[in-house]
Length: 396
Image (tube, rainbow, N blue to C red):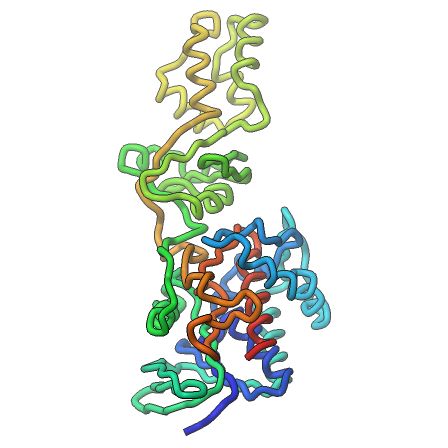
């Protein structure tokens, strides 16, 4: 039986970050990972270039049932700190848009950086290892593992759960972290796919299919929450950054409101054209502002055609509302298969915001996506992994 100061379950972003920080403090650290490779989510992120953080990361960019929870965590380790780590490894990176930072080369640069830091700290990484059971001792924990057909009992003083969420099951997502939380009396909030495309019933879905590939700069709202970025029609429904962002706030049966021309007062523009150029058509005007296929679809839906002079103000107002206050109700999402993260998780009210330790079980820590803290699109969720991993690594 092997003994360690710290065992970390999960070799993703949060787990690797925690490991190297704990190792630097002289702790003996073992990371257990059930897949064949570490950090697969880092590898595939950002189109293979890893959107590793965001210049503008702050607590307001995160969803949680306790909006104050992550404040002290980010105060201990911010995007500035992680950027300094990246720069110290001479990794070239660039800002793509809206503060999003990507590697110039590949995501492997970030993975190699973390593995190098772990090696410096004498961290042991063990892959292809399944967790059979976890039990609390008087001091510490006993972890029963399985590698192939062989079982091994491991013991540790501190146990860190960095198992991630349910998103992208093809790279090894599992429920293990939530099950361990429940075993030790921690609550788990409702789970749902987040940062995920929205799907629709067959009649609207068929129209999306016909518009597949069409993209526009749009503002999407649910109540007072809004995002303005690209919207993309797909063969399943709606995607693009603005849709992914709003999906984290969407619940079954909720309508979303789409403004396809957020910089324009469309009704005033059409009225002015009707007054000055009555022989113009709606197509002529709208083709200057929206993709032709989308214009044709909208005008066909409303059965509007002909010259402006022949169209009533009521019909023109109806068109303007359809373009700028377009209400749609998704029937679902594409699910965890394509979701970038899981919304919900281990209840933050059961975890210390100072250490990431479970309040009900000494020596048990939760970090990263497994917790009920979900960031916006654009590197925020990786920053949560780095920050929560750092804070736990300082305490284990």
